Amino acid sequence: MAGLAVSAAAAAPARPVQTAGCPSLANLRILAQRSQDDAAAAAAILSDPKADHLGCSLLEPARIVAVSERLALGGREYECLTLQGTGVCHWIPAGAVAPGPASPPVRAPAERTKR
Image: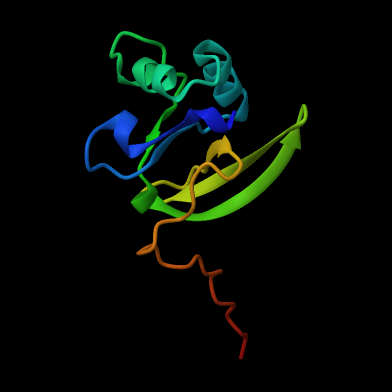
């Protein structure tokens, strides 16, 4: 599944590394099966406007805030990433990308004290 990361050379010149991510882990696994864990094939599926993207997209590392969940399933590990601009985490193969360097840390809301 780590094959779903797209290198800068494979995606486009001078672009950061991207990876296919999906709001649903089941859909990520379907995309991986359809693309045979090949990054270029996954990118081609996601760039085809007529294809069923299963809600998946190529994620820019700069949008990644943090890893919110980790899961092992069927001998593979997955991470769900918190992204800027959405409250829905996106599943990726574990270790496919790291949070962007300019991403702010995720902070829990401060608790209010009653007076």
